Image (cartoon, rainbow, N blue to C red; front, side, top):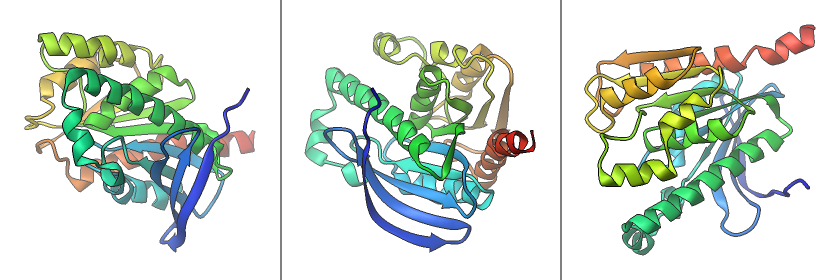
Length: 255
């Protein structure tokens, strides 16, 4: 039986290249706030955008999301638990113990899966042309989501990689979220990794380990940057997603 997703549209306005909607959606329980960017032409491919630690949905929507919209692709950017409008200092303080962290990770995994299903259910989106892009923390969620959801046709990991060198905490974390196992399950779906050569948060060797574990087709691009990637790296990722997702609908129509 299909799950019913309830949505609330908080605002809608025209923007260059299409429309911007502030929405919330849920099945039961807590609503997930999001920004939905829709291009002028529909149906279009759609990309779920997942931000990094201490960030928020606007950072993804106003970067790669707007670039995708200009190229004719829809995007959905969500606030992850305890981020953006969902930030709660008391809850964040309580969530510092390992059990609470793992609980939040499971919650985030459920929510990004729901977000993908919500994006696919929008009438303006071609559910056969879905992608996911994650930055830093969001990259872990992105590769895990793609591993579980065959509908994801293309994956971008920005400032992402494998877990740090094995420590007791890393071993425990790998039991809950193992990016190496996940990336092997992409089964030939295109992967792009973009990374800073001087990243001290997600170190280059972590990115290389994950990239080497992935199957073809795959691509890794390096920038002279740290953990914060420059605008041209974001534009490159957007162009790559357009190449992966922007053509199938046209090809099917021609056939």
